[in-house]
View 1 (cartoon, rainbow, N blue to C red):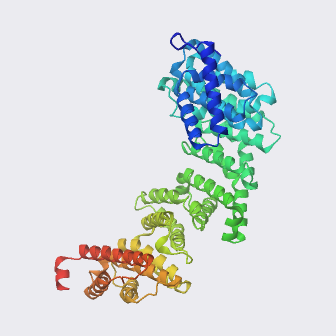
View 2 (view 1 turned 30 degrees about the vertical axis):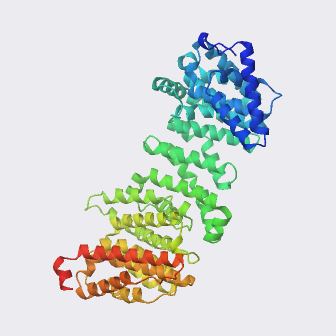
Length: 578
């Protein structure tokens, strides 16, 4: 490999010195027990990677079979970095020799134990194809000619083919827009050839099959294939089979199905044959999902959480893709079946899975709400959104086995997002219908404990605030019961007492959000303000433990916020009368 230019020529002795220094630094990095020496070696190697000499030294190290794997991985990593960021250092006449050298190196490292090196060199080759641009216009054809003639080299071809579209979309690669666009055009022209090659491969192992699927995924993310070709592509049913059976291929198979659905959503009419194929393979997934849940929700999550997550992702993506169809055929049994699975996913007691459909429900609610008022479609969606509101209540329920004042930020964010989901429900159900639904649920769930009561209060703070004040509403009974409930002393040294204290905090917040209701009944308003004022004036015992002090502070902060909301909502005359 000759990568020298007149201004950066390395004499043989100088190159040998650079190589010797690099090998000494690598030995210190991987063999020394002294931290200072390791740091010094690492600093030196990092700076060395940024020098023009690193091209030749890395090439030499990759050629040396007597050197440890770590050394050769460093060389492969350096070569990738140089092609990505320092390609400008090379004169044009050295491009070809660099390409030939990298192609020779990569096939020597195709064995499984060399996988990290193989991957680094595949990225380097993919980046080089972009950087060389018109100097290597037939990169894909060259790769097929060199590595596509023997099954022994297929792993190398697959690795580079997978990296080509990924690196074209990698904007950390230091190249210009013209080169990137030219590369994209050439790759899109080669897409059919690549996919056909993937379909011809016989995969003797799961590992080999995964390589094929990963390469296919990379290309369908990069370019839209013809609908007729995709609908007849045998990899689609194979992906559904992999997800249904579970195992090592299921995650990549799920990603492929998701990408095909996203591609199809761009033009439902054009991709209708693809969508029909996908819909025809849903039944086994639905059956697997229902069979898992039949064992019990918690048992299902413990046994196969990954499988449930994959099925949820697929059904939610189908829902998002088919929103126009759902709008037209809400009474269709197949459409309702998809919505029911998505609803069950939302109701799973696992935040990672449960939150996946949130955006789908939001988009669907927007579509339904945008319909003309004379359109009866809103009524047709109310059943599913009443069920969704019940799901929101269940998922808002805190665990009775942990301190709600000290939950992780993820739990707080999850409950906040559930409130946003409740807002979507209000758009379909109307706030007052939703209010009556939540109040009825509260009455029915009283026997289930304080955590269930707190979840209803938490949700009512949003629903009640948007509802129209009505004198006959059951909400007045709840409002009347809150001040005595909040004023009742709580022993927060027990687990149950902590839950009660947190419920008191949520009740205070609920009163603040219901300020427009309170202002219509002065006697209720007076009672609420007196109770909140007493809380604000309540002193925290000096000898209280830090966690008790923190709880009391949070309760008083909620009281201060509620007091402010009530005062802001009440007219000046009303407050002066009080």
